[in-house]
Amino acid sequence: MKAKLLIRIAAVLILIHMLGHGFGHFTWQNTDNPVKQEVIKQMFSHEFHFMGTMRSMGDYYRGYSLLLLPVYAMSIVLLWLIANASDTQRRLSRQLLYPIAGAYLFFGAIELTYFFPFAAAMSLGAGLLCVGAILLLNKWNH
Image 1: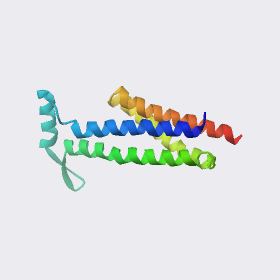
Image 2 (image 1 turned 90 degrees about the horizontal axis):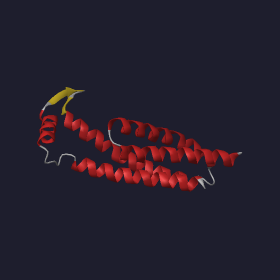
Image 3 (image 1 turned 180 degrees about the vertical axis):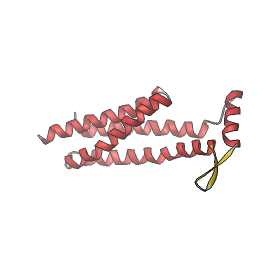
Image 4 (image 1 turned 120 degrees about the vertical axis):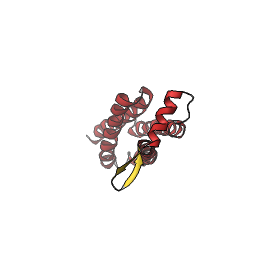
C-alpha cells in the first residue's frame, strides 16, 4: 500500500467529519426537547465581560464550533497536497504529516472524552492513517 492512498483516505475521513460537524453546527439549536430548549435559551440570554467584549456562553459555543470548519477544510487541502507530493517529496511529506497526525489523534481523544464515538472515530482514523503514511514514507527512505 502506498502512503498516498492512506493520506487521501485520511482526507476523506476529515471531509466526512467536516460535513457532520457542519450539519450539527447549523442544527444544534433545533430541538423539541423542552429541557434542551431551556438550556439553549440560558446559554444565549446571559452575557459576560471578557477581554473587552460582552458575549454569552452560547456565543462562545457557536464561535468555537465555527472555528473548526475552516480547520477541517484546511486539513483536507493540506492532506491532498501532501498526498500528491508523497512520491517525490517523501521527507517533506513526512515532516508535514507529524503535526497533522498528532493533532487528529488529540482531536479524537478529546472527542471520545467530551463528545461522541463517531466524531472520535473519524479523527482517530485520520490520525492513525497519517501515522501509517509516515511509517510507509520512513520505510521507503531506507
